Structure formats: C-alpha cells, structure tokens
Image: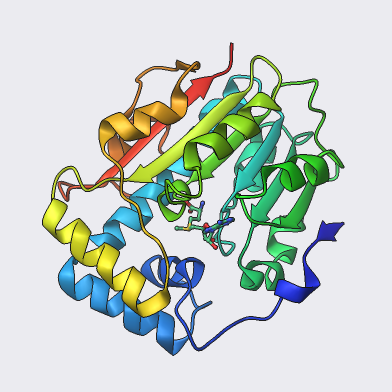
Length: 270
Ligand SMILES: C[S@@+](CC[C@H](N)C(=O)[O-])C[C@H]1O[C@@H](n2cnc3c(N)ncnc32)[C@H](O)[C@@H]1O
C-alpha cells in the first residue's frame, strides 16, 4: 500500500526539482530539460558535484550493509529520491529478507516510480509515503502500517537535511522523529558542507535558489554534529563520506582523490 497526497501529485516540469537534478547527476533518465539545465550550470561551477552525488549514494549502500549486519530489520528512509538500483530495501533484504522498509519523499515524481521501491522480498514488506519531512507526525503515523515503533528502526535522512532551513526547524524535526524511535534505533545522516570551498558552495546555493526556488543550506561540521546530540555516534564517527567504513564497499568504484564535501554519520539511540 502506498499513501500520497493527491493534491500535491502534479509533476511540475517548468521548474527544476532537487530529486530530478540529483537523478541527472547520478546518470538517471528521470529528469526534464529544466533539471538538466540547472544540473549542467552547477557542474560548470563545480564539476566535482557528480562524483559527490555518487559517493553520497554509495554511503547509503555501506550504511545499510552495516545496519543489517548489526541486526536492524526496520528502516524509514526519508528523502529517498528517485529509485536507483540498488535501492535501500534490496541491500537490507539481501542480507535479511524479513526486513521492513518505509520510503518517504515529498516529490510527486517518486511515486511514479514507486514500483521499484515496492518490490519487497516476500518475507518482508516495503511501503511508500508521499510526505514532507517538515511534517514528522504524519510520517510517524503512516509508517506505523509496517513499522513496529516498539523495536529498533534505522531512520535515514541521506542528502535531505541540507534542503531544510533553520527557519523550518531542521533540528527540531530530527528530534521529533528520533523521539518516536525505540532505544537501539539508529539515525543515518549525510549532509552537504561548504567547509572546504565556501565560495563554490555559495554559488551552488544561489543557483538552487534562483533557478528552482529550492533552499540549499550547507552546514559546517559542528552544525551537522548537532543533529546527533544525545545519541552515540558509531565508529568511525562523523566523517567525510568516503571515509565511513570503506571496507563495506562492494562493486562501488573507489571515490578517488576528488574532494567530497559530504559529512556522514550513524548514531545509536541509547
Ligand atoms: C539529493 S536527493 C537524495 C536521495 C537519496 N536519499 C540519496 O541520498 O541517494 C534528496 C531527496 O530529498 C527529497 N526532499 C527534499 N526536500 C524534502 C522534504 N522537505 N520532505 C521530503 N523529501 C524531501 C527530494 O525530493 C529528493 O528526492
């Protein structure tokens, strides 16, 4: 079963959308000329962005392998993006078929491709909710269809929170979501930073704002660390994406020497 907001279900092809721009960076086909145009303008400013997108996606692969090896059988993946093989449930259910996964995104284009997200192993289940992370109560309520909140859950917000401004209370949203989880649950986070090239980051922020009306809010290492307050970061801690358990890579290519301005971490709720 999937749930979505029919009123918000129109795919707007006149303005670039972050999910489709990211799909373009990843080499996908689910994007429109406006998305390609913005993506190419960003690449002209910073050609490393494509590599950054790929390396970010590979972090999701490794983090899911780690979680699965550490006994997690329930996942809520918010800002899941346009399906790209392998999706999270493929990795989780490969190791433990009886895993349940709820995908959440606010972009109506994702629901059009939801079959790819919903082809669960028969032993487990997948579900899809079209919702905005800024409405955490709705996500928690709908996720309850297949998530047992009395047991540990991995909540992933990978490359999502830099699209949530401070004014929209990014920290409060994460707190509300984590508060709903049982002890032993995990927060999995990847977040863009401007720490290494603030000038370039500012240019990309301006492009997103001007060309798609999207808020992009890169955060410093300290600001990203705040999302984990009250939780225990698992080793190796808050790292740049390529440095997080590289030994769990499978067929992902090596990141090479290109800088990757994405902080990642996995923390346990105690
Ligand atoms: C850069 S993509 C990341 C996709 C995937 N998590 C990954 O890392 O490969 C960001 C996703 O977040 C979604 N998104 C952005 N703002 C959102 C919001 N306020 N609520 C829910 N999803 C949002 C976008 O539609 C897009 O699919």
